[in-house]
Image 1 (cartoon, protein in one colour):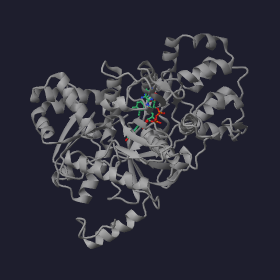
Image 2 (cartoon, rainbow, N blue to C red):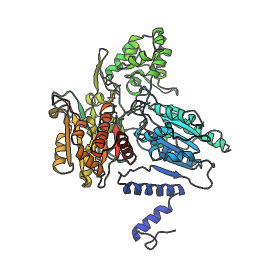
Image 3 (cartoon, helix red, strand yellow):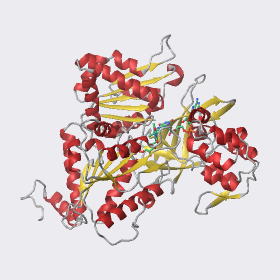
Length: 607
Ligand SMILES: Cc1cc2nc3c(=O)[nH]c(=O)nc-3n(C[C@H](O)[C@H](O)[C@H](O)COP(=O)(O)OP(=O)(O)OC[C@H]3O[C@@H](n4cnc5c(N)ncnc54)[C@H](O)[C@@H]3O)c2cc1C
Ligand SMILES: Cc1cc2nc3c(=O)[nH]c(=O)nc-3n(C[C@H](O)[C@H](O)[C@H](O)COP(=O)(O)O)c2cc1C
């Protein structure tokens, strides 16, 4: 059916444009679009921040589907990795003619679990082995008494994590164990993935599709896809295909005498070909400090020019280049120590790694130089390095600028990590590279990464921003965007640092925005300017009546910065505000905040 002015609410020009677009869409694209528009309408009706991603949609709802069994993919994702894989897997299954429902865990109604037939769970782990925010309530439901029996349900879990955390892939492990306890039948074994997850995710997807095909009676030996996980991501710039951005500015935001060094780094994004939004991240591919590389080569007594294998595929690099650009050398992990015990051939180390407490204590604040100094090896060779070391992970930074305000630039706010441990000064790989070894005019490899779970409203929704330290970065981006778009809704920033005089990041900009009404309210907490330490959560508590009033008027809450302490304290304080001002019990206040998270009115970008 063609749209016209008589059978639709559109004018002639709109109807013509829509007819042209709709005619070129495949049935899947039409289904997707209709889900997208419905989801957006619901978000607007709820007064929640509009999200650019569709939270839930059904793909390939067609009669010729490959199997009678319906497939559900649920993802739990904080910074978009698991969500991205969920989307790729859903597309793959549709390519293979399956009917697929893809949903974030917090958009999935627990009562629908009874109807699920084939369930794929893709989840990251955050905090200290905790589920990501959008998986919290589903995780709790599944582990509670109300979880249904899942006999007849087939499932498979892809767990994302980081081996340097003590509770590696814990949330994926939890889901996998619980689904089995509830009576589900595993399609294939759970796949745990470290930071570099593309290849393992690829294998997991293909192995699952093979199993589905064989149980649907489809003759197919090996599933390969026209598009791999890596190539799907490579359409844009990525880790494998980074953009070399020229550094325009690199300045210390702290005044003389500060205990901190926070760098404001501006990069040129000329012809990048993609836009970013406030809340998105910039990913930097760092290099190890040449001094640490030298120290390690000297400790190992290897030849820095020797060509060594960097993976099992036979790729090689000269040793110095491999240790500078390819391998992580400044962090010890439990799995690394286990591998070292096998490879180094040091009996003392082999004994010690049996003791989990010893491993836990030893890896804290030590690096590879310490390991090879404490446990020298007669047999370990440069060519064994790739068996021991993982790839140097890229580092994410919340973007501190608005694309609309600076289309050819991207800004980040980077806190230099420096500490002293076990008799040596130590530096964060990327932050100190940016602080000490990158000058204007240099280029660094980067790419942009969407963060679908940290998106700001452009409507009338009031916005409360809590961002001490470098956590202020995305709020600077949002302020620039508001100025550019002329947004008039109310905004309130809570910022904190150690000292007003040296550490008020972007001070003049905030004061200008306050003067110009781009920012409505500003509350500051400088912890070391008073006898008693004052943090942002204390300021929230001091203003609890107004804070509560803003929430009741539909304000959306954004928290960015330190995860370990700040985000937890802020959460508790907001719960306290709801209890004090709204007369809620602790459980009711917690439920209110959970609901806010579901509505995307409480979003966090914490690290
Ligand atoms: C979504 C997201 C957004 C982010 N946004 C920002 C941002 O806007 N600004 C920003 O500055 N950072 C941000 N980060 C953090 C950033 O990605 C890096 O983790 C940070 O810069 C440190 O990286 P690095 O390479 O300098 O340090 P690394 O080499 O990774 O070293 C840091 C590690 O050193 C160890 N360490 C640190 N102090 C001590 C100590 N006292 N004793 C023992 N061990 C210690 C810890 O293991 C710590 O994890 C963000 C992270 C994420 C995930
Ligand atoms: C603040 C923070 C805490 C994390 N905690 C853990 C953890 O406890 N265990 C783990 O295996 N991975 C942990 N990770 C790593 C993430 O699970 C990993 O980066 C994953 O790819 C993120 O996927 P997502 O973007 O879908 O959330 C953590 C990452 C961050 C930023």
